[in-house]
Length: 262
Image 1: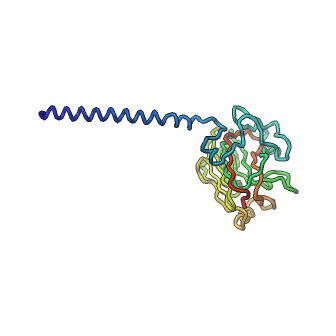
Image 2: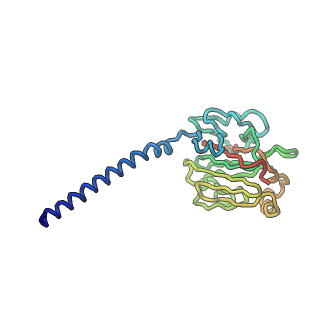
Image 3: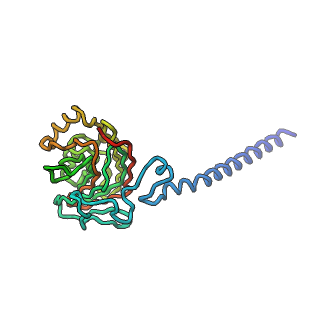
């Protein structure tokens, strides 16, 4: 084989390998595509096989308010409804009416995830470890709250401990953790024995002890200092706040970690 023929043979071989490599890449991509599509196109308010194996449960079925009630024990108020697979608060008077929506069951140590969205100037919250106790009327007198807020459009956005994602009036989340009004935000809560953590859109917004002197010191320095039962219970209901402003929730999932948070 002369030199020119040799070079042509080598180039032909390299071209063939490039084509085969491209075919191989396409085959790998096609094989991965169904799994990727299934993950991205998963229906809201459903559990994957992996989540079921890990013990996750749906708190909202996407169809009705089964498993939910008002904090006072009565049926859910008419201001709470389900639209297109989303749990929606339609109230718009800007007044807290006390018709907060809570789970029928109580939870101690747990992990909770959900998506939330508010309109311009919107305000709501996710309560947990809340109980209807003697001498109290409102859920915030006992329950801890992860703030749900439009930081840019609501006055509370100017108060660091009241920003979206905060453990309300106790921790200061990064201002950049929240997405703009009208956007879905993803919240995660993890309540373990003696420790509480909160995340918003993947950003840690709270990491505090619970049930010890350090926790009680934080409460004493907050607006809840005058509420003796605030943040004292080892278990309680999970609630969605009716702050009199439209809010939406979906993909509400929970995994039990233990019977007690203390």
